[in-house]
Image (cartoon, rainbow, N blue to C red; front, side, top):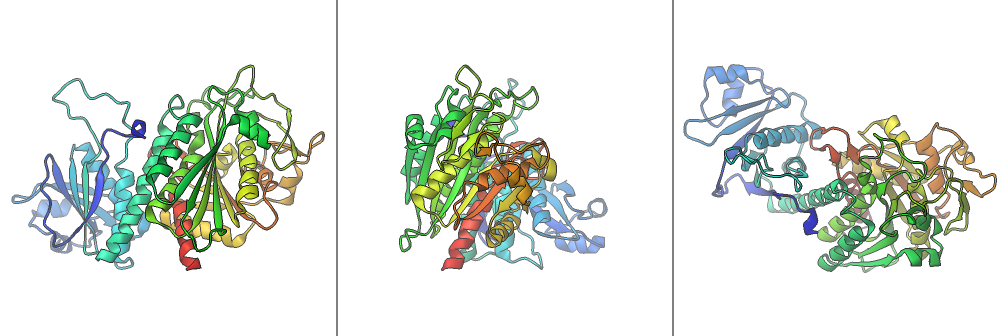
Length: 508
């Protein structure tokens, strides 16, 4: 995984308010978070050092307002406004604002003083600030050269971020768990941002194998191309048959609950490491960022790695459906009829609707082999979902209200939001085939996210709870927004881990 490493891997640590500050080399800064003030006197009281009246007049504590100070007898200090309505989102945004400001000034070490917020526990404040610090400090910079001019500082992520908090040792353990999940989010970002000449199906397989070697209670098996066909995963094999790197199904088993080995949750990720659209070729402007079409698998891999790191008491099957959707003489032809692993024959109406094909066979295989009671698939599946929700939320489809609610709650807690969308009978009816059991796409251009979900639902067994997360919007941002960067965001790691953790607590 060295090939995914960035130039600087910044570390976030907790410090007690009475702990001595570590010695640092290079630029350092303190950060104070200040709520909106009604008077200069209240601001003066909130600051730990004396400032001039001009400073008090220039800073009001508005949300994300900043002011850098140079105290006479202290370290440079950045004031960051919290506004007058402080919630989890605004605290994350304020933390992000602080990190962006300091990175732009070449600061290498930051000391963030956790504010007291009436409606949040000290643990939650520390947790949110630590999470936002890790995510905000991220840059995909491994291909950038240093400035030729030695007098120009290279703008790199911070090396050390210390969150100063009165949180207890018990709280610190919870924050450490949050940091592990945030680090796996960066891992998923790196997988998504690295280009497809590096991140091939074989590369992801190698990363999964290395993960199983280094993390506890994790093992991996792989179905290669010839095994896919031999076992009947013909749709997955069809999608990847023109690729330079053959398709494969990577299966990671995390055994976190030995007392109930048959109690399993399956996570299935779409892993198209590059999507040309196949013979229904994508046009210029729609193909260039398709190295990120494997972000569903990146999220699933990151989530199961985080579960293993944090020792969650849950059994997880993580399936990565990996393929290149390429063009060439071996590429699947439109209207090919292929027999799925489940036995349904499917007419491939559009080769650019390939993700649902690899997912459907993977869903069937996981249910047949591992008998999970719950299955969640994650995929950058449809542009229609982005049209519906923008880049701000995943589309959530489910056959179980309690599962849908649990994912919505987990998404709200982690700010990886999931919005439930319907699968109507009419969506399913559109898939009825003429010369095959099923079409792969709906009859028209409308409701594409729902017809794609309806297609997947055909491959879910009767008594299995299932949810489908269409992350085509939030997995790959067209522009940076707060601590979500432009490009691959790692969306899915945190909501999946939070769901697994809450499932563990509920069953305890």
